[in-house]
Structure formats: structure tokens, C-alpha cells
Image (cartoon, rainbow, N blue to C red; front, side, top):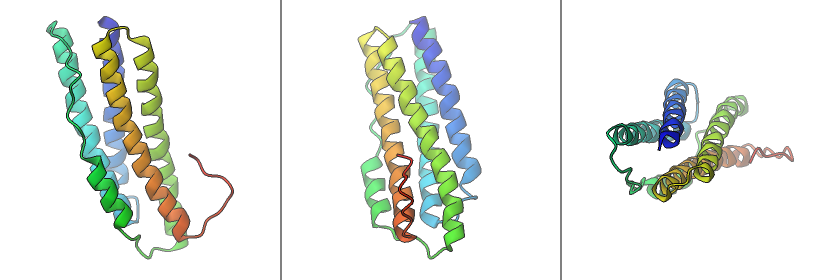
Length: 165
């Protein structure tokens, strides 16, 4: 279980840095839907921080790690995101948002990769389930950011022949 504790301590650091990224960039993005998305993701990362802290405490107290996690209400947020129109911002403003969104996309993708690799390294089935669940939460975040990026690409008819996902 000490391996799991190390994995969770690194994950805790990642989740805190993700939360900080969204906090710092929420006011930098111009699209109001991007601001809302960053606020939502900041709150989700905060809930991940609390959850992981609880898991670390359980390990320190030699308690069983419970992989039964609360589900995130992401489906509702995604539906709202898809139905919201983008603001009538300028092309350069949208490109600036894309830069920040691409960073968010890569951060979330790194989280997915980390949890996937961790799930392959832990032997305990409960710990494995925990890592897979965290990975799936982060996959949902990747999807949110990707959806927002696609909306900006479509709005501005950007077809560079390259999409970072």
C-alpha cells in the first residue's frame, strides 16, 4: 500500500496544480462559456483534492481504501456547454483562448495518462479501481475542453489540418 500512497501524493500535487491553473486562467479566457467551464473544472479539481486527501488519510490510518466514489455531474454540464453559443469575440481573442484551452487539454490528458499508468502498477484490486475511476473523471475533463476548442474552431472556420487531439 505504500506504493499507493506515493501514487496518491503525486496525484494530489497534480490535482492541486490543475485547480490552480483553472483559478489563474479563468479570468484570462475571453469566452464566457470558457470562464464557466474553467470555474466548473476548478471546482471538480478541488473535489478531487479532497477525495485524494481522504484516501491518503485512510492509508495512513491503515483503513481500507474505498474505491466507491461519487459520480461527477458532468453529463449535465456537457449538455449545457454544447447548447451554449460562443460570444461574438474577435478572431484574435478566440485564438488567445485556444492557447489557454490547449494547455488545459494537455494538463487533463497528462492526468489521464498518469492514472492509467498508475492503474497498471498497483496490484490491489481496490486501488486499481480507484485509479481507473480517477482516470475516467479526467477523461471527462479532456472531453469538456476538447468540445470547447472544437466550438471555437468551428466558429472561426479554422481548418489548419491539425487538431491537438
